[in-house]
Length: 325
Image (cartoon, rainbow, N blue to C red):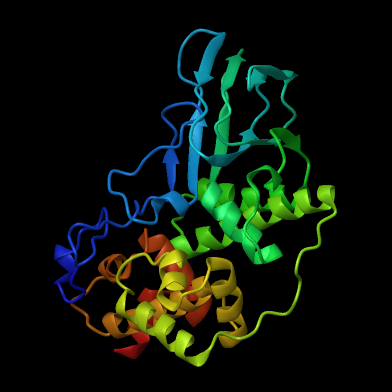
């Protein structure tokens, strides 16, 4: 997409590369899960979709109780399920009984990849799911241990977990959904890496493995310049962490840590600041509305743009515009 197109001609549903054969993932970060324990697919798929986390919200279908549901196992993702509420039922994973009764409030379950699932629900239920692909887990494992993992060493089998850090990270994503406030993909990528790293850390404690824990070095000057150039050239659309890491030839984990060491900001914080700086140029033009400025810079909503702008500048876009004319 050409960033110089008139704002009214911008496609507000998805973002296309100049090469029409390549599409970025859906800009909607949290989607409805139409099939139980099946990761929904975007209409347009990017070359990096297999390594991207997916967030879903699942509701029990309308009908008389009990309702019986089955899943063939899904894809190669680890699935974190957070129960919003306390449903009653029976759950089976891998053909074996897993839980029966009233699910404790705010429970968090982890399901391993490709595992069949079956359940009987005796009432309505809402679940929030995080699908963490195997490639993301492997990438974080290699960053932690300096070697590619053996498949059997990655993460624990299906279980209920009371880990507070995992719970807090998932709740951060749920809060974004509950507030109906769009966030950028770099924010989601950052939380995803933290979730994957935590799963690996918990597994390493069980296996008594030593995680490398040294202070990250700053990103090399040429890599930093290349990352900044990429960001500046793509401010008009969502930017994914894997794009930036690929542009400089590093893994997402190493890039994110070294970028922060070099700039003092996470990639998400830096991109938001650059978007806000560019928005100030656009806001000086009275013919461009605030909503079009937000959409031109790939903010999901005007409300999200306003929140980010105020947190960085100290006032809303509309108030800032009044004082600079």
